[in-house]
Every structure is written in structure tokens, then in C-alpha cells.
Amino acid sequence: MARGEGIWLYDEDGNRFMDCESGTFNLVLGYSHPEIVATIRQQAGSLIHVTSRFQTRPLNELAGRLVAGSPPFLGSPQQRAAWAMQMATRAGRIAGSIKTQTLYL
Image (cartoon, rainbow, N blue to C red; front, side, top):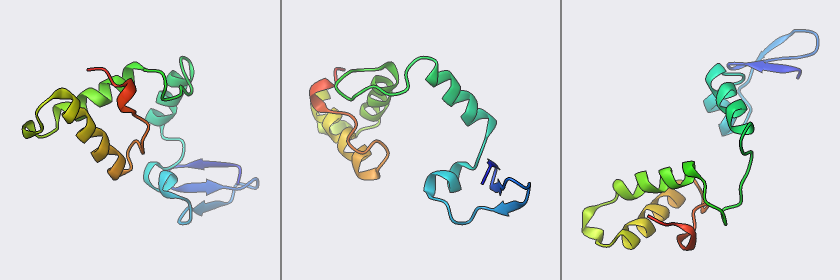
């Protein structure tokens, strides 16, 4: 395959194939979506990857949203942060990329 667009893949000769075989990422997002391409370009201009031992603004914002959405009966911010991380991990959204020892709220 030479390129993709939406749900379509194209070979070197320009033949078009509907992609019904790719993994979850491609099936959900498709290929070459303009907003996703722009977001990746913007992020690549600042940070491609940072180990979870360091904090980043997006990571802290996500942690804050998770804590804000946690049940109030959990009590302390630390208990709420722990709950939020467990829920995110169980849902597979961040799969353990937030660690309690590096989470400051």
C-alpha cells in the first residue's frame, strides 16, 4: 500500500481498497484525517514522547479532568486521583501512563 484516505487504501498503481482488516486505531480514525494530521504535526513540533517520569501539561490536564469527574464520596484528592487512574487504566485509555508518585494536584 502506498497511502490511505478515510477508509480507503491505495496501492502503487492507484487501485483503491476498503480497509476492513486494520487494527482498532485505523478503523476508528481512518487515514489522513486533516484534524488528526494537524494535531500530530503540532505535537511533533514540541514533544513526540516524554516518559511518564516527567509531567506535561496535557497529562496534568487529563489527570485533573479525571479527578474532577470522580465520585465525591472518595474523599481526599489523593483518593480521587487514585480512583481516576484506576478507571482510566481499566478503560484502556491511558493504560497506566499516569503514576501516583508523579501526580500533583
